[in-house]
Length: 96
Image (tube, rainbow, N blue to C red; front, side, top):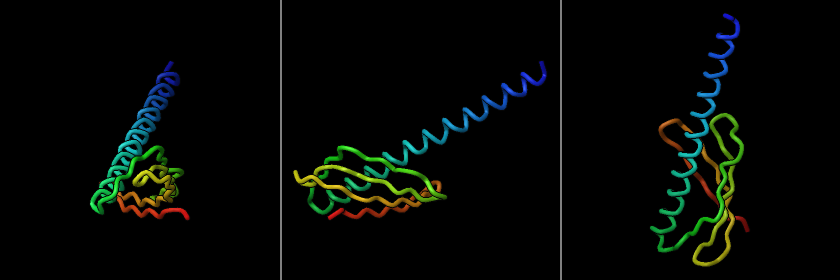
C-alpha cells in the first residue's frame, strides 16, 4: 500500500510539472508571436500569422517557424528564441 501511495504521488508530481511546462511554452509562443506582429506594425506593415510553432527546445533555445501574410504576401520566417525565464530574445529571418 505504501509503495502504491508513493508511486501515485510521484506520478501526480510529474504530471503537474509537465503541465506547467506546456503552459509556459504556450505563453512564450503567444508573447513571441505578438512581439513579431507588433514589430512589423511599427514599420507600417501588417502581418497576419497563419501558423507558428516554437519547434524543439535545445537547452534554452528554440528553432521555430512562423507562417503568415505580410501585407497580403505569403511569408515564412525562421524564428530563433533564447528563453531566459522571465525574458527572451527573439530573432526572425524571412526565408527567400
